[in-house]
Image (tube, rainbow, N blue to C red):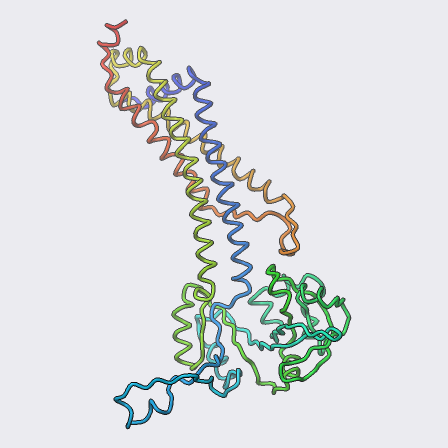
Length: 419
C-alpha cells in the first residue's frame, strides 16, 4: 500500500470535480462557523443571566427563621405521649431575627478551608416617606468592602461611588426604581420609617441597578452601622451571614452541615435558584441540539457529493482496480477525500466562527435593565472549538465511509464490459 500514491489519486479526484469539492467544504465551513457562533452566544447569554443571580446570591445563606415551635408542650408530656395530638392556630416563636453569637460563627467560618469568604448583612423592612405617601422598601445593611469583594457590588452601582456608604455617615444607595419613584437625586436627603415607627434621614450617595426591575423598585443599601442605628440595635446585631465557597457544588452539603452545627436556617444557592438553573440547562441543550444538527446536515451534503462522485468516476475506479488497486485502497482514497474536505472546511469554520463571535461581541447592547452590559455577551470557551473540530472530522468520515464501501466493491470487469 503506497500512501503517497493514494494521496495523489485523492487530490486528483478532488481537483477534477473542484466545484463539488468547494460546495462540500463550504457546507462544513458554514456549519462549523454557525456552531461556534451559536454556542458562544448562547453560552455567553447563559453566563450573563446566571451572573445576575449567582454574582448577587451567596452560595450558603445563614439566617434565623421565625417559625412555630416544633415541640409543643403537650408533645413533651408523658401523660399524652401515646396519644395523637392535633393543635391548630400555632403562633410563631417569640424571638428576634438576630443571629445570636454571630462573632463565634464568623470565626469558625474563617477557619473553614472550604469557605472563600463571607459577608454579614442586615435586612430591614422600611417605608420610604414621600410627602404623605409611604412606599414599601427594604434596606440591606452590608459590610461594603466584603460585599464588593464577594458579590461585585461596585459593578451594580451605576451612579455614585459604592465606598461612600462606608465613608459618609447615614448614607444610602437607592435602587434605581425606588429613586425614580421618590424623584431622589444624588445629594438629596430622604426619610425612612422602620416597622417599629423609628424615623431616620439618609443622604443619597448613589443608585443601584441589579437588572431585576422589581427588586430595584424596593431595595436599597446602607452600611451595617447605619442599618443598626436605623433599627436601634447594638453593634453586634446582624440578621444574615452570606457565604461564598471555593466550590459552588459543595453548597448543598455545606448548608446542611452549618444548619446542624450553628442551629440556624441555611439555604444553598442550588435550592434557592433551582428554577433558574433549569432554564439555563434547557437553553444550553437547545444550543447544542441546533449546532449538532447543522453538522449532521453538512455531513449528508458531503455524503451526497461523494455518492455522485463515485457514480461519475466509475470508469476511473474500474481502471484503478484493474491496474492493481485493491478494494481497501479505493476505500482509503474516498475516505481521504472526505477527511480532506472535513479538515479544511472545519479549520476555516473555526476561524470564521471565532471572527463572527468577535464581531457579535462588538455589537452595542444597551438596555436600562442591564446597565453593566455594553455589548452582546460571547463565551470563547475552547471546549466549543474542540467539539466543532471533532464533529467536523467524525461527520465527514462517516459521510465518506459508506460511499467508499460502495466504491471498493465495484467489479472492474462489469464496468469495462458495459463500456
